Structures are given as C-alpha cells and as structure tokens.
Amino acid sequence: MALSPLRPPSERAVEVAPTPQPSRTYALDFATGEVGGVIDGEAAIRQAIRKALMTARFRYLIYGYEHLYGCELEDLIGQDLPIELLNAEIPRVISEALLVDDRITNVYNFTIMREGDGLYVSFFVDTVDGAIINEEVAV
Image 1 (cartoon, helix red, strand yellow):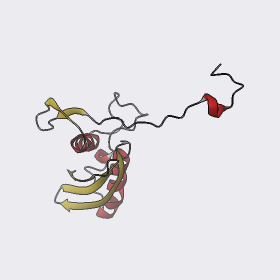
Image 2: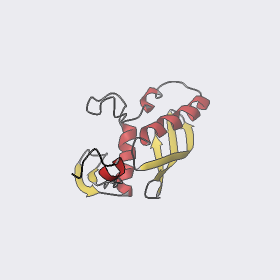
Image 3: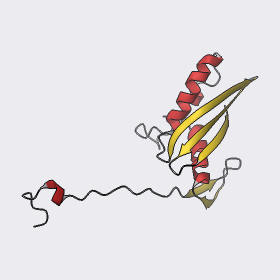
Image 4: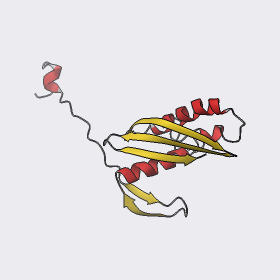
C-alpha cells in the first residue's frame, strides 16, 4: 500500500540528489596516439579540454548532433578575418565547446595573439571542484 495513489505525492516520492560521477578516464598521448594508464581529477579535465577543442563539431557520427561535442574553431581557420572578429568569435566558440562538460563551470579571461599565420589563445577554466585551470591553444 506504499504506492497508493490515495496518499499525497510527498509521501509517495523520495527526491534523490544526484551524485557527481568520477572523471576517471584513460590517459591519451596526443603526440603518439597511444592510450595507457588512468587519470582523474584535473589531469582528466585538461585532457577533456584538449580533446574537445581538437574535435570538429558535427563531423563525427559517433558524437551525434544531440551531444554538441567538439569545437567549431575549424570554421575560423584559414580565413583572413579581422582580429576584432576573432576576439569575439573565439571565446564564444571555445566556451560553447567546453561548457557542455558538467565538470566545467566557467571559461573566461581570453587572450588572443596573432603571430604570422599562427593564432595563440589562452584562457582560464573553473571546475566544479573549485580548481582554476590555465589553458593555451595554438589554432
């Protein structure tokens, strides 16, 4: 009789708070393409940031359109865009790519430098654990 519809909903249902899942994953060596070892915490988040920024959004069927995984930086590469437009678009594109991860709460303080044909971006990432991660990307 515990699930009787005659009892009020507050007595029939129990609200359960979500528990954070561990961020344990396999370590990837981006230089050699090898997989080995297990990482967790800040190292896993750094790897997730790098992998999300290296993966073109909507290109790979494994991620699907509903997951919004990856980054659209590739759309900006190779175009002769003014630095003002890059200063507006790069933070938006990187933030959209990283804020999909529930371990990341904020992406901010972007510094964008153009040197010849290269573009260098640095930024800070806040995590749910309270860590502040400084990342640099060569686009």
